Length: 343
Ligand code: UGA
Ligand code: MN
Image (tube, rainbow, N blue to C red; front, side, top):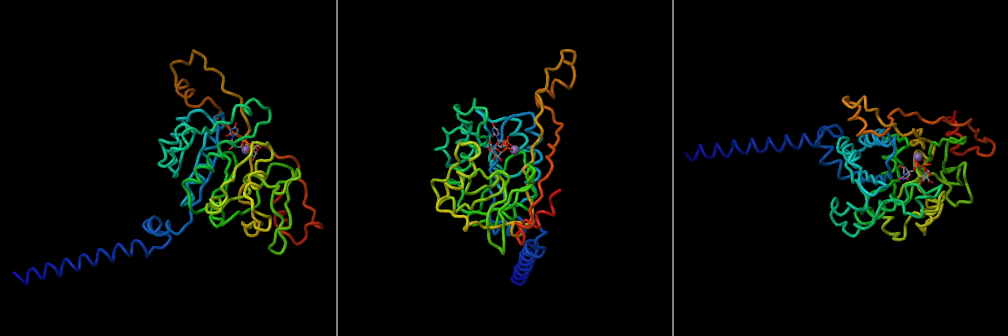
């Protein structure tokens, strides 16, 4: 009996050892390709990327969010903070988020406390644009949502980096791998729908010497909203960081609120600002769908009308004739490479 018991133990030892070895090989041997490696090992070392996206109900919203959501799905260790400028969360957006299945937080001031632990103090903050701006012709778009996102980051994030990603832009997934490298404040080129076609820091010999942007307006940081990212730890060290409701000065005032922060502190990404990994595109606005004639009351159109209220046919707006980059003035800078990308 004793011999048999020993044999059993021995056998068990072998099986156990084999199992451990097998698990080990699953996790480590297929580095980079194994599901186990991706989820158990790699995730821990990749800094988190937080994407703050302001959004609002309109005809093109679901189309824009579909495109953006499936782009984000290519990026590991990313949390999407989708923040609605509304009084209540749109269930169509909630359904879409669940379907796309990118890790997300769907925010609006009123439901925040239910969705996120430790966020009770937010329960009275609305992401709706304040009333005084609602009726203005040129209202600052997406500011209240971004500020709510900032509050969430301040409260919940300790590491990683965050980025303001408008819902109608076009993003190369590689952009987020660049953003992940951000420690304090990073910047990179943005393709824009103006004759300049690009907005970027100007870099000579690895150093920033100014900004190339069609609309400087006396700004210290003449950059696009899509052209910078901020480190999580850095934000925590800047409790006054906030975006102002001054139209056209959103980026400028936010970057100034990061004081102390100087142009020389900027971390340059996208191969020293020679690549365009994000475009400030615009989806053409469509008229609201007309009411559906009663003669269709027994058709599928009734169901569609409930979901859509909108036209899904989108078209990217055409840009005016481009402005050539002055090679004499910008010789030896990153703009020479960027010029190759301009039509
Ligand atoms: C540009 C800038 O890139 C924005 O960052 C800036 O907020 C805006 O101008 C401005 O200065 O008002 P643009 O493409 O012209 O952006 O604006 P939209 O795409 O219409 O809006 C920017 C973001 O705010 C979008 O993600 C949009 O969904 C959101 N938004 C817009 C709202 O949350 N509420 C609104 O009423 C309008
Ligand atoms: Mn836009």
